[in-house]
Length: 361
Picture 1 (cartoon, rainbow, N blue to C red):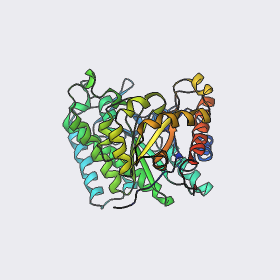
Picture 2 (picture 1 turned 90 degrees about the vertical axis):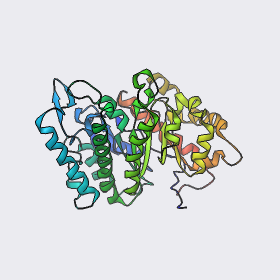
Picture 3 (picture 1 turned 135 degrees about the vertical axis):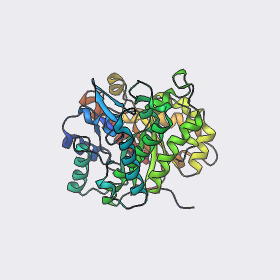
Picture 4 (picture 1 turned 90 degrees about the horizontal axis):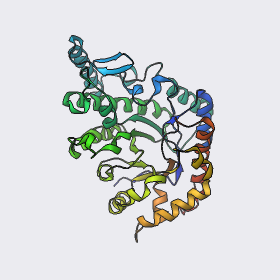
């Protein structure tokens, strides 16, 4: 069996930041989480908001009265759908360069991504890995509506289009990040999965969600990258554990006890060499951010992780297969608080690296 990549308690961040100065925030990220830096989504710019950023290129997409929706009942939809699949199949058969495809981030949506690439070149960075992200398929489908205000999640045709669209958006990032000859990680940001199983999604089956995630994850992996999933609240964690994802990222500050209910699935996940990204640095409240320190967060994590140990799953083994992150994105925070979260995340990682039993390369 191929040896899996080990994070060794490195730090990274969850996509979003509140900054307006792209170069400033990217340099901050490269300074504070240099082992697994990530391009930030700067949602202060409307084209970089989590869902909007990944809509470009969808067949039938229309913007009206301040809202995006899919107009599938228009004459142009079938033509656009045909063009979409034609391009997708060309990429699948490798007869087209994805960098010149409809799946590339556009000028406005891709400004921060390209600024990140430029910073990596400028600084000649050699990180442990590079991280990118796309909005997850469940979240985009749950939020995207058609012209009759019906969720795309309940339209099989739109489900297929959105999954393939996001898979190619992810592969486009992988292709460009490969320039730096480092492992690439693409996270699926799935906040809507916190509502899975509730009355809002009563008719959505586990099998449907698994299919949505599996197709994208396997496409990313076939491209030679690792795939992670981020859920910022509680969910049915078996969905993630039983999926083929390489990394699970969750809000470990607020929901550790819920996650720990799945301790057997967690132990199997770790025994398979996969990785958990612990969102241990709080992001929901500036007062809580101010109260906690990297030291207090390290002690909190060490005390909680005891409930997940076994004879073979030790703290040291877990740390070898751990990443530390903020609990969620920081876009809603004041800039100073967001920067403190990022610094705490890097410092927390440094504290816990000493427990891995191996020197950090």
